[in-house]
Picture 1 (cartoon, rainbow, N blue to C red):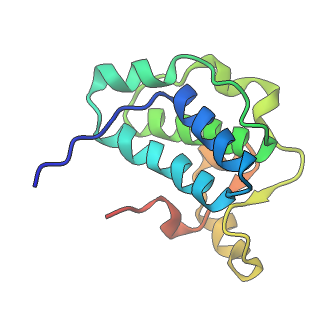
Picture 2: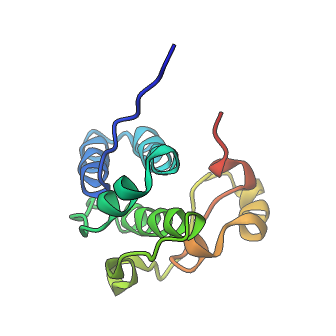
Length: 133
């Protein structure tokens, strides 16, 4: 079976996350954020640049906005693409840290293993959060 990825832009992903959050489904919103990273990794170079260039509208959550900016920054760095300037907008940085797992016992793992692209936005993930099959 051949799987074809739909290359949703970060703006489309942000809108989908906002819809999930409106339904109070933060788990689905988190999955969408990390699915964007997976789709970015499997896209061609031209698509990678195109799908991150436009600044997304807010998801309605500072935490998810920061997560998306960190994911875009990480994705671009991983593929030697200059991240779009919008990721440096102050609205994408959290004053209070966010641990994506929500499980207190995993916070130490997240502090140690979060990529700098996420950590600088105040978002921390466990080592396995960025792995996919």
